[in-house]
Length: 471
Image (tube, rainbow, N blue to C red):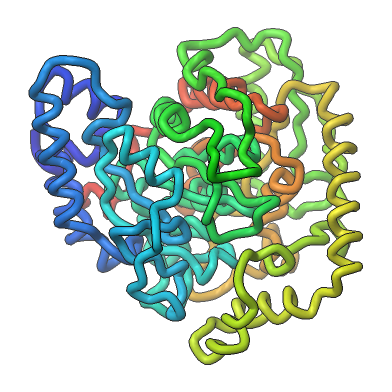
């Protein structure tokens, strides 16, 4: 099989091919690394590529597949790791000059689990400094680009992860999400992304807001995301905030779970947002798919505060960093990181305490509202990817500020609900569109089942950007 065809296969297809001995993990790793060499200079999806380590892991996986017996879940599957996630054998920069070329003291739990599952770790994907904005810009190099249009952003903060999966630079990517950082890049890059229930995957040592940030997959298919979750979810002694309950069966509804009778709250604008008409049409069409499957779709908005106090705790208020980074390294930080750390450092304890209380009240309010519904369907972002090197300032002829990018995503970090960005067609510009599916706390299987139903109705995994196919 030609190298590019190998790179276009999903994780599940790779595993089937290894089992049949159609090709080996070394064949696949070589093919993917060749694509990284060719495409990454234009995409800036990777900050570091571990050629030696990836090929060594692929050789070991090839030898393991040649032997009889049970195999680890992701044996030989290439996986990238966002550079907010600590790795001991690769640099962990957090997208910052302050940490350039520094490996972490130890692997994060999710890296340990992926290694135990047999994954071939390719390298570290690009991110804005400390994951603080919705575009992949930092002082380590050029901006991350969208493979569907190099003039557009790949999003953030898991922008490198989204671009890598969309361009065939690895079928699975470790991503993080503190206000939409999995779902926004998945939406912009035309791939699938899941933010699981808060605490489902241990986040110990992850750089981010500890009461909002989660780890999850960006993938080409829904089944691949389920494979990732099955390999990485579950309690951890290293993470006191991790859920203690065993994870659910993430594959339960992928074969066509009955959705008839499920109640779906549909909101095109959350009652306040300005939405591009093509995004609204995509969400309405996704709602029609669910109606055809027997769902009861009801126009309804979750409780949302769209004013200045809508998100009382920014990442600055919670970031688990020593303030001496701000004091000692100001000259190495990006302007947006400087603003964020200054705001966090100056926040009074009483104001932080009040923000925590407000957050708890909001969580309870949304949980009560959710009792009437099984799922929520909204846009993932109000507009397709904006321009690289700047900010989108207008949607549907109306002026907006850069905060538009998290309008539909950040509130679910406050509540902890599982959510997914599901590709759903393309705008007339050729940029991908997506819808967002939100489930009740703990119901990743339901979110995956709805996602799989939309995937069957509007398949996306066989469509690749021209840059990825060489056209």
